[in-house]
Image 1 (tube, rainbow, N blue to C red):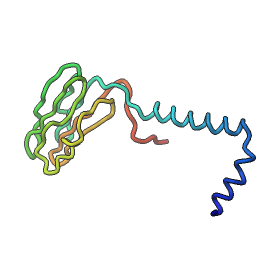
Image 2: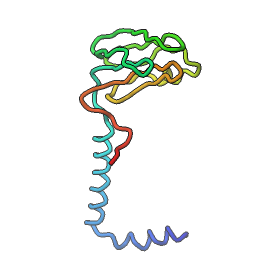
Image 3: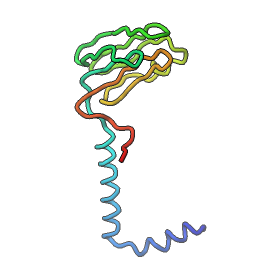
Image 4: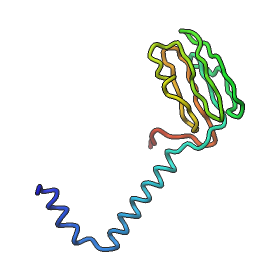
Length: 132
């Protein structure tokens, strides 16, 4: 038995019902806050950029395919069933194509070599991190 196990074994018998309740409520609060702050909600439009500038803003309510010019060639973005994805891109590694369907506000797919991106926007934005 190492010192950590011995410490835990010494503390556990001293915890009362109120201590367990406090630990349980604290854990539930952490889970609820994580879900609330990191879920982006539904997206209602896609912002498509080419070369760092907005190429087009499109609603997700209409299925369509959009061809976006970039320095390496044309990227194709599909909008279907309120989701968006980059279907094809001339970039060598195809990371943005492999990313698949985006559906929550704040999600983004970037094709860096071709300088094309698609970002979903909605009433709420999904956060990667929180800053002070």
